[in-house]
Image (cartoon, rainbow, N blue to C red; front, side, top):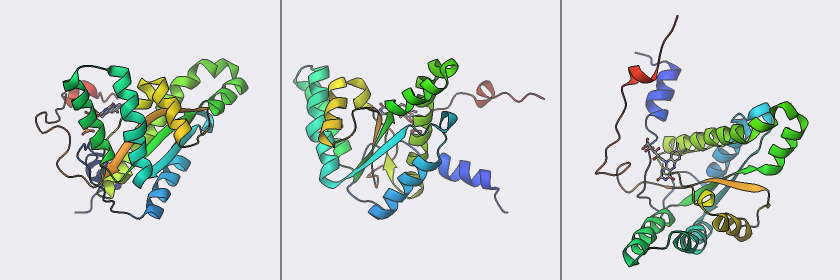
Length: 214
Ligand SMILES: Cc1cc2nc3c(=O)[nH]c(=O)nc-3n(C[C@H](O)[C@H](O)[C@H](O)COP(=O)(O)O)c2cc1C
């Protein structure tokens, strides 16, 4: 039986993308292919009025380690504090992200959003939420593409939690001050199954979530 293209897309690629926390320093694709995946996604994922406010940075090797261990870890511990137990738990969690092959950092360029909002004043109020929609589409596309190549990844938001982490990320990697961090995606060949073993993924009844009306 020949499967339809949408079945292949949904059953193979969309369904197989999962959150993976346990990552290794192995990539199934070359760095050139990695760059090409991210470039194609950034170029072709839609944005409101084609404003193209999405930005992405691929970190591998020492650069990815630096993000998690030198920028996110101290910034997050400072933000959440806690006792020795909490500090150890958060350190373990963030060290897991550093264990991956690399990280894709996602940003929205506030300058592009402001410029488009100024061009279309009646729509100006919608651009911030449309920009969030667009970065989500970009994150999903890259996450699914990495999964289709046999790599695990997760989605983290430390830049959004903390102004200080966000500022330090821009400083550390010499990025424009108008880039607003929207997510960080550590990736690499997974060392185990998806999600938390103790909490299998569950699904609400699909009939309550989708309606078909003629
Ligand atoms: C907008 C958004 C924000 C998320 N934020 C986080 C996060 O901060 N940390 C995390 O570990 N997972 C985060 N996730 C991943 C979800 O928890 C995960 O996708 C969901 O539980 C379904 O599991 P799956 O990815 O294995 O299908 C986020 C997902 C989305 C779509």
